[in-house]
Length: 246
Ligand code: ADP
Image (tube, rainbow, N blue to C red; front, side, top):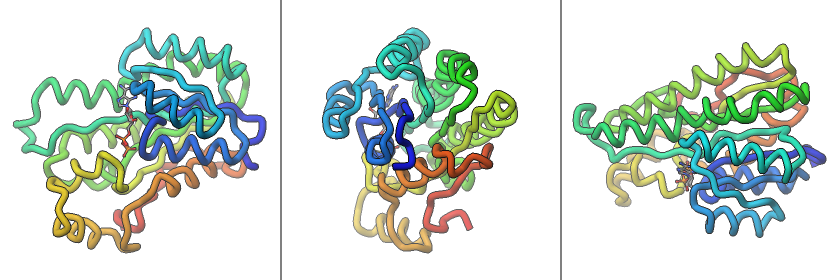
């Protein structure tokens, strides 16, 4: 029970990696706010783990501000913030990604980190201790073709993590990132291009450990980085990728 007595907000926790992180946090004793734009999905995960469901659009300032207010009341303050909600665009050549898709990817993956910082960091600083985890991607470290601007958004998250870490360390807040390799979540199709057995085998051949990642893998890494066991670790982007980026 490494998170007993801690409170956490996990964005995008209605599905995939975010749900895996929320489940592991709850299993380690944390009280979790399951925040997602899909309120039905958030409610299902929250019911399963005894958490609080909250609808949020992480790309909208008012929605994130409301989340912060509700978290302050519902959780009695926030010890851990996980910026996990994310989207990708359809795989395409650089110039074929639409401006609307570009804007959406940067709003949900990047602007959200700014918005949650504005809404939640002042109170976290006032508490004098806490952890923030940004869910980036191996795509941000070792970009592959056709997910170009998504890759760039995840690289932005890695740099934002370091910028936040160096600034917030004196306030007692640690900021880290995890960089997952693709898992068998709804996003997998975007990474594969086409979800066929051949494309899966080709992708798996690039992961030395030889399997896709799981939400539990991300939950385990997140528990460690957000627990006091990692109290000397800040500003890292931990690859949870079965060796893909070696
Ligand atoms: P992953 O493989 O990264 O876990 P998923 O698509 O399974 O990808 O999960 C991403 C989650 O983020 C989904 O539950 C989705 O509803 C959520 N999400 C997407 N956009 C937003 C947004 N603007 N605000 C909040 N949550 C969002």
